[in-house]
Length: 468
Image (cartoon, rainbow, N blue to C red; front, side):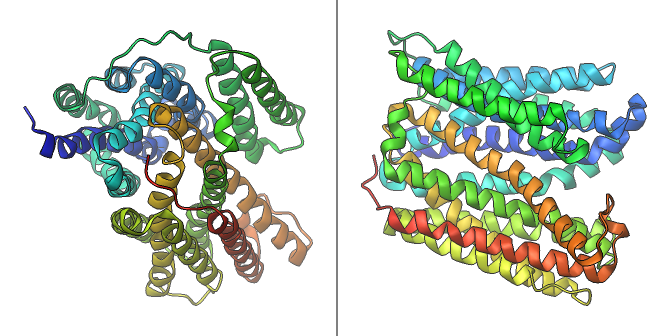
């Protein structure tokens, strides 16, 4: 069906469709939460698990699915994930109550983890090493497009066809993408004389669930509650047990020797700092626009699309530049521009207008677009290709953990600043005086810029290597 010269582009289409579907499903449901809450007459806290169960499921399963693909064949796991994701989408649409919907979302997350864990590895496999950055740049553009399109498409579909249709639309696209993947992705099925590390997978997955759950739920119930503290510290104990277990078995799920490669480890550190600080902007800026600038949700939503648009554009630029000049300096430029954007956002006031926000936020999208493709290329380029699945899974976990921590840390710093100025703790930020809101926001975003620029250290001290 395809020749060697154009197979890589068909592979990009197949992998891009899976990336887009699994990414957009993480954001498209957000806009339907209010309608789902009314349908099942449930509380907002319960309905939020329709989103959280999906996101947590993906993050905690990515390393295991990456390792499984490295062992038995990435194409096999990728297509299996597509089948499960599509079937679970249909079940979500048929869900008769909220627990059933949450359970089916977990099934969706398993399929999405299989797709996302294998997508990058298959993409790198389909393109020559000299074009790795270009391929990752295209993938970054697809992810940013999915993030931006989710709320927009979700609103249109819900308004015309109802909220269940946001799941049904996955079925025809999933079938088409599955057929395309079958014909254009190289069959790399294999059987290696190794046993899958079920104990390691359970320890890592359970630890991540505990830590991420405590960070997420602590925002609502408080971080000092026994359950939150128990889950948080229990998760780190689980990680210690995971490391101990991986060191003593012959065929570990995660080869800990990867971390002795400085470029690999430094890339993970930089990725976590960028994900953490980017989340300050995505979570706190909409609140600032609505509570301080009095923008309605429509205007706020449109302005929040500016950053993903910039990311999609500069991800492609970054990919080409990385192939030509290497990832180190491109990632460094990305960190500089992202930090500059956060610093510029820290200068917003109660008198700022729409174009002022657009100008500042565009720097943030530009910076992350440049950084992410280059850094991903560096991280994956420093592990053997046969371990690309698990390496991408680890990178994805690091980024997702940074994002969740960013939500918590950003809100904590802002609330602390408001308390320092007013002497009063506000459970609803909107009730705080405007002057305290503005001053607290400015300080919080300035701290975000400083944290972002810290990533210059691990990025500058690593070296560019020949693509593997």
